[in-house]
Image (cartoon, rainbow over all chains, first blue to last red):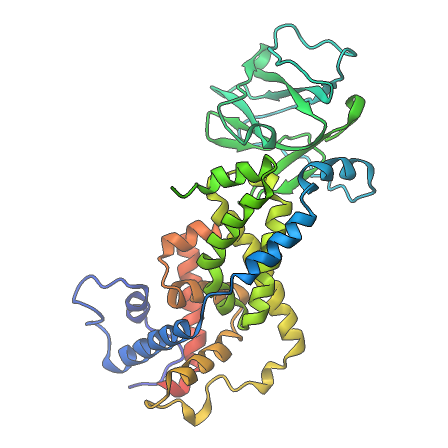
Length: 218
Length: 176
């Protein structure tokens, strides 16, 4: 067999499991097939040497998260008042022609909520947040976030003049992550949110922090 | 009936911290071998996985699709494994490792020796190549599964695996 440093295209197909046409590796030169089979054997041997990690890991994790249990709720307020680095996103226009967004807060009893916008009853720790997204081409827009279990159909926005969609939502004091859902499937981050975080899927979640008396960082 | 990932995530976010154990156990079993193969050291893999679970808990409210918690967690785990590999590389001089195993690499190699040779060769791949090779050939996942977990297209993953194989072939040349 001629010595070579890389697998032939046929060998790569064979190793990928593409075994159509001529049977398993039938088109391969015998020497190269032996090399390929050897590599697969090595991988199987390596796998056989690995073993499950012990359940003590679960205990260690649970011990750690119990100590951090309030983090989901207390964290946002701490974030609100603590010095931190704020990532300001470069100006970006979403593909879906979402041109402008205004998020404003209406502290309870301080600023009236637009009459046309349905609003659920607020509690003493709740602040009304008005979301807007200009998306003239959209057929539907909703806001989904950590405050509604990221359900895409729970907070539908109402189309207004100029294709500006809006909804007012009572949010609890704390940090919330959200995005807009256009036409039921396109996730659009808030173009004006100053803080965004990685969503773990290659996209960004917008962040809003609602503080007591309507103080907000978004 | 086993609760779905989404149901568990919502319980945890609602304040049921203990429910998080369900996810920890589920994905410790699912990804334990990947972590070990990706890091190349069992203890370091265990540390990486533990840290990944804690980071995932801290960031749970940002998990946009709770029903896909596994894929979301996997990416956190991948980052932790890369960090672990970087820490190991800073401590171990790879020049001290004989990836080909020299003249041991003949037809009579024992299983453990084969695995050691592969481990040494894996250590010389790029993180992306190593992850791809491990998922494809050590774990036996399909390219479609890999794409779902890594969020990378099938064609790009095939390229990583192909390059990894070529690199492995070069490093393990004595096995030809």
